[in-house]
Image 1 (tube, rainbow, N blue to C red):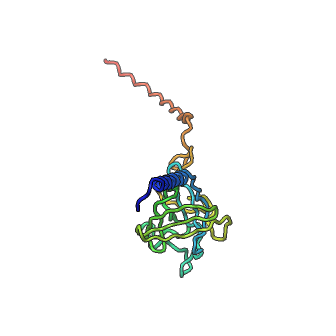
Image 2 (cartoon, rainbow, N blue to C red):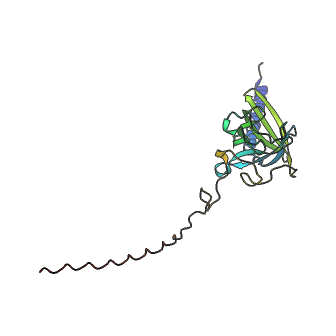
Image 3 (cartoon, rainbow, N blue to C red):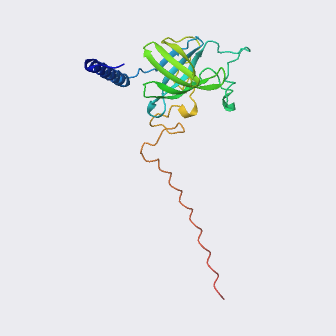
Length: 223
């Protein structure tokens, strides 16, 4: 299709305007602050409550733990364990309190992405997590790039019977994987004892004085 002088100018202005609008929207989207997804969330199927919180160096990553299970016991009436875990060392750990969201990082779209562990099949999935509404969390898991599924988790503020309410790695709290475990608080040594404060160590008791030697016997005089 050919444009006359006026038509060509109008088409150019429309194209330029749309391009400018697109650039403006892209800039606004990239500049929009992300909503912190920290909190406790009920999964879409209602089978678990997941506590999501900051973790890692400088708390820039995102971790998540199963703090409540609708069915915490197995068919034998015993606490469920992570028996499908690909790591044999973790197959005896309790399902309640295990870590499933593994140190996600904030991407350029202001969403957290990384890996999530599914204890029901013992597999890891690529996951992207973001919150556009204060009471909703979108969780998009992908087995491969084009095979993805999204869920909406609902925020909860109450504590129900059987829910772990303590701090991570603390009494009545979930347990972090070693690489994401909370670091010791300042002033605490790695062994759990108090760190050095700069004060001098108590002096050792003075050594006991040596016992005096017996005087040597005089040699007999020569006759």
